[in-house]
Amino acid sequence: MLAPTAGGRVVIAIVAITIASQFFRSSTSAIAPELIHDLSLSPQDLGLANAAFFLSLMIMQIPIGMLFDRFGPRIIVSALTALAVLGALLHAVAASQTAFILARLLVGLGCAGSFMAAVVLCSRWYAGARFATMLSRVFALSNLGYLLAGTPWAALAELLGWRGAFAASAAAVAIAGYCFFALVQDGPGARVARRESLREVVFGLRDVWRIPGLLPILALHFIAYAAVLTVFGVWAGPYLNDVYGLDSIARGNVLLAMGLAQMAATLLYGPLDRWLTRKRIVVSGAIASIGLLIVLVAVPHLPMFPAIIVLVLFSGANSFSIVNVADANSRFPPHLAGRGATAVNLFQVVGTSALPIVTGAVIGFFPAGETAYRAAFAVIAASLTAGLALYGVFYARPSIPRVSKSRDQGEPDCSAGRSPSAAMSAVGAGSEEVGPAVATSPRPDKRRTTT
Image (cartoon, rainbow, N blue to C red; front, side, top):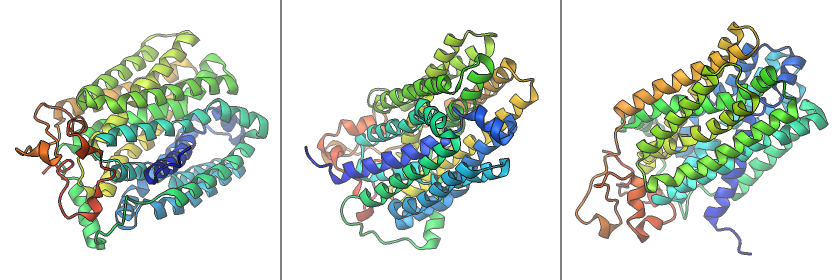
């Protein structure tokens, strides 16, 4: 059996660290009733605790993007993982709402660089047409974290208690951090680019926001990822418990199915931009997601089995976020890759910080039961609709200059209205180079600039 290539080892490490991040994002859902009971939490408290995870992500986005472009993801992510280990251990000993929120903050800080590292490293190791496909594979495999947070997590909590289960998770994330440090290289070959000064790093962050067409993508991304995380990672477990009386293992089984749907859909969405425009993919996924939420809102006393089917289908349909991530990051020039990933992730984590708090307040406003959850699903559907409206009206395709010798030079031809990824696939061997050796070349990468 052949040993994995350098790029393959990087992907293995990325997958390990992003699995840990996805797991911690949703680790409270299957055991939420037990947490509420043992720590005397209200729905608002649970929403706030989960929002704390994403609040810490939000706080760290800009610093981490700047650090990535200056020092590289390997050192920064490895160091942050130590905070995730501490946060997992604090989960295990938390005896109050305050301690539990602090634990969520710590583990959020520890996971803050995981997905930005995935985007930056995939952009360096897998250029052109392979970027969206490889990123979708990484994101799909990262959803193993969601699967682990379902039935296996519920079963482990039954065996060890939820405190013992969190202690075991600390050991697992420590192993993931070690793998990242041992296996990752920040880019293919020698990185000989001049290191930017602090002033250049800061001004580069300003330049990111000047990228044409970025804001409409972020307007939808702000709510799209937050929607699936709020349903899957926060309220699906309590909803199934309060409305249908499912125990922890049964709730875990449903969450497992939702995670599998996300994984399968992410693998499907990523390569679609070779044949369809990214806008068409995103709009279709968003409309389907809104329609499924409307079913949960509009149908009172929905039987359990149809409700579970809707939750699973929603998890799959709403996985179109991977296309938004690839679309946004394909617009950044190579020297802004880290700060570009920061911009995308910043909108994502602000949304995922706010929506659990808002929906927690909505659920707390109503008497316990189905009506409260229907109101929360209505808020999520309305938010998705607003984001889709902004995206649909203001979206602009990347402005990629076409030159007469583009096919000879390995440049993309987007004259037919195809996405950059699809155009790159028509170039041939030129698009199969591993890593945009961008960091070593003074020539701008026309494939990803939009000036």
